[in-house]
Length: 438
Ligand code: HAM
Image 1: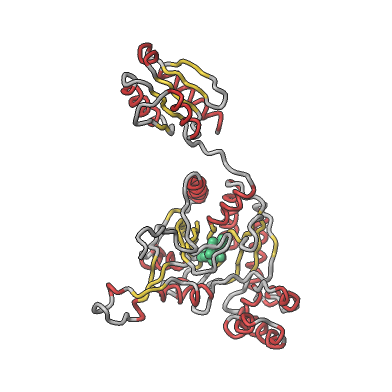
Image 2: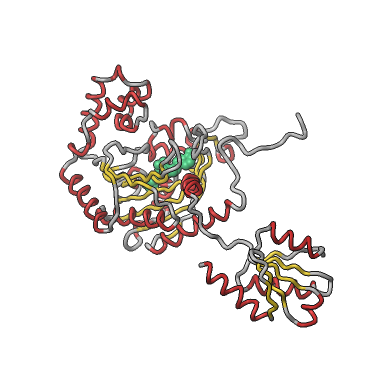
């Protein structure tokens, strides 16, 4: 073993370091503020669950469950040390959080809460996919779910409104919203059979994945990105022509409700999504500048999922935003927010000035400013140089003159403008600058 081995983050994972982490925090803060203004509340969930929870909800035949989960035997809860794990004890890192939210909803009897239960979550998800730009093995989602007794299209539209408002607030505006309806248990089975029969006729012209999906999940063939399959897919029967009256009415209602809210969308009959729990409404948002991994959000309705997991009859709809990709897209657009960052570098000189420096640093921090206070005495030139390199907006100069006169010298680093101020003038000046930036 080479003892000087350089450890590196595992393939498909990465560190979010400053200053990017500030962007991430701002992005997540904006989501919280936006979602809470629609009366959503946060749920914090475990990052691992029983494997069978995901198999049952996301679907055992999906790529996510069949190929991409990080699954292991939970030795501590299975019998003796070294004994083979009971398959029922398998646990997986969560590949998504809708399943966990349903599990929690049932476990805590949330159906008894008044009105619709509106939850959001923020955190890492894990899928063993081939890493590439915008695709990671540990990635982050911000998700929202509405659970209750109603499947009114207004609920779907409001969830989409909230999503698009959030994207607008974070400057992710070069996006397209795609919507579709994939029917329900009354009309979809017949459509799936029709699709299967049509696909059988062209089977020889399809690639291996699509051939396999004719049996396992014909709808997923519609999702194919393989160039030579596109013309074939374009001629397949479309679900919109096979919806039952109730689904048709629901879909028309969704479009009316979106129009009422002034939300632009495109219909995409091939939007079937890669998870099995969806019924009726499905939607996705794609953003520019991301290459092939350009979906920044996916969601849809999943009536019946709670029942499938042993809970009471419940309707549901939700979405999950991919934070990694959204932030990449914002960075590529150059449309970055002005985040406050380091306001004041306290440039104290001489041990006489040090107690004043400690005190004013605390006062400014209490007033809400980010402050850097050097822990060691430094030469003036070095202090100002460091203030500059740290990106501070101001250097607060405190030397023997300032201590004697009870004042501070505030130097704006951008233009070297310099003022002598007392404590209250100092705070006023910094606050008015902050006001101007907002
Ligand atoms: P999903 O479409 O699988 O849906 O994922 C949602 C979003 O997560 C994607 O649009 C993408 O932005 C991001 N994402 C997925 N995989 C990766 C990856 N490997 N690397 C980076 N980003 C990724 C769901 O997860 C559903 N639970 C959404 C939902 C909630 N439906 C109803 N409620």
